[in-house]
Image 1 (tube, rainbow, N blue to C red):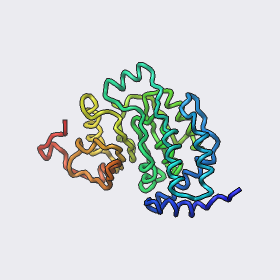
Image 2: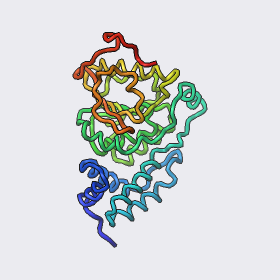
Image 3: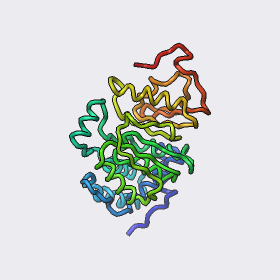
Image 4: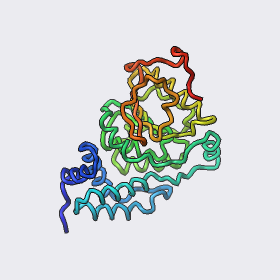
Length: 271
């Protein structure tokens, strides 16, 4: 039986694949953790291949092959996202009516990068969280005060609560909210994760207009991680965008980052 490579060794191999050193270390930690946990609890049948993928990942870890480990980890990660969300007919009708999207995986990059901005007292928020995997993994890497998971599907919330226990995250660190993303305020958070919960055209456009207003006038600094970003069109042009790679776009807003409002500039928000 081969000995497992050290986390430092695995992280260095992952860094050779092009990841920054800090992100490579976090990825090595997550891969090692998920490989050696028992198969996840699956109260609604979302993860039939989890055990198989965990076993494959465990077998790869002793070789320390960064590319193979990352590829298999990402397959396990996508499977755990539970993309086949079990919406009830009423939930599905509501999501369809406002142009919502269906529990797509947001990618591991936001999870790895969030550790650079989250603080112990942070409150993170995900609108349209699905089973909440993104913020759960952020809690694993960077434990913080509270993650608020907002999702319309009650079954997905139950699945997420089971994943929280599986990952060993204390109950006090996660609040599960069954609700419509169109109705929830964002002013109480300081880290906001967003993956196009609704289409910005049609009825969904009002959500982004409201989010833009609340974020710009938030009483505290707010960091926004927006995947497949469509928020920018609704923000004033002077909002600070500090990172973008075509998949993930990151902003800083709130009272510590004053910016011109569209009204003062005689501009109108994007339709």
